[in-house]
Length: 195
Image (cartoon, rainbow, N blue to C red; front, side, top):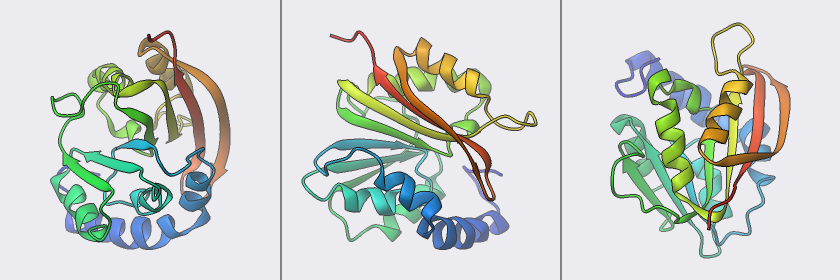
């Protein structure tokens, strides 16, 4: 799948399968509802795509919170902007999280939902370091990724290594089997040792 320049078929699949079906199912909603959000936090959603998670997060952050969605695909960030235009507590950024423009130490939470396994191998650590730098000293990363069972996705140990090298400490995790996604890793990481 080409996220930066999706084909016609990929656009249809995202619209029908991901946005219309999966994002309305418990697969997304139940996971997002259990995040420890009070509604006033600043959240950075990495790899937000067309807004499948954003549509729920923006509602959760209705008590003065703000959602910043970032994606490298101009097509998908435009779709998210169009779909969520009625909300004023959301910002859309098309580009690389490593580029200037997103202040360090400014987010309570970073959410990575089914996005990091699409990052090229040689960029993974640099991007994870950048995401960690965006967190406040009490910040948390929530990551939900399909994991490597047959060599196609991201192995759990690689996720843990990337997080540790970025100065993040795993405080909780779980594994689940999910229809259409296979085995999924859900991890929670906190900033360690930042003053």
